[in-house]
Length: 254
Image (cartoon, rainbow, N blue to C red; front, side, top):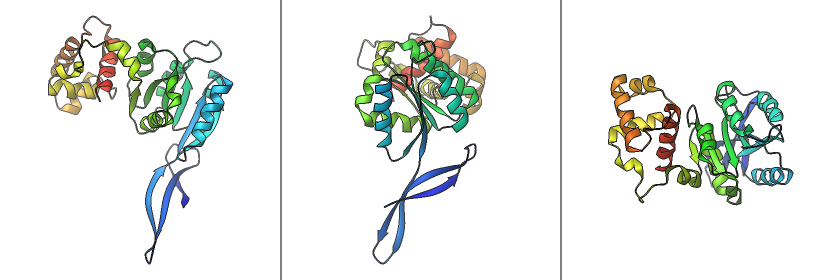
């Protein structure tokens, strides 16, 4: 049977619940087999049929609590401020402009609610959208194509990964970005130390923070990063895009 156990979590408006799976053992009373947190999710999707389909899918996941469903950027801003969800599942485009509201939401929440993850759904495999979503760090961010809605396990897996601080990028988006000439990942060309530095970059750290975490000088970190950019063929990109594209390649290799 399933029981609901209250658990207060700092920053939440009220009580954050966990699902406890309880099993009875003969002559041993009751034992808690596993406990997992309930994910409080806000959905933002302007298309009614898509919104209802996603709501139905989410309702079937016992560890997800759909606290609100929104149809516009202004609405989802107000709702996330009110409910402080664990994650927002959002369309890339919605009213009022129908351009890049999902990207702007991810950027806004990075500063206003840094503990809230964002999963962006898009019909576009344009890498520039994914780059914008991951700008500032890949932790707690995902960019998936809407075709993944046909695979509930993949979509729900991305939501859970983001809530845990992970990152997910749709393979088709990475393919459009990297266009590898061989089957071998470009990351394979990096040294072990360069791969360690790249993994630190994927968490959103700047060079100073990477140096502190790895007990290196800032100059040594800069040298490793320049080597990473060169081996991944990113030397001619702008500084921001070099870092974000390098992170995308790292995520694709995981």
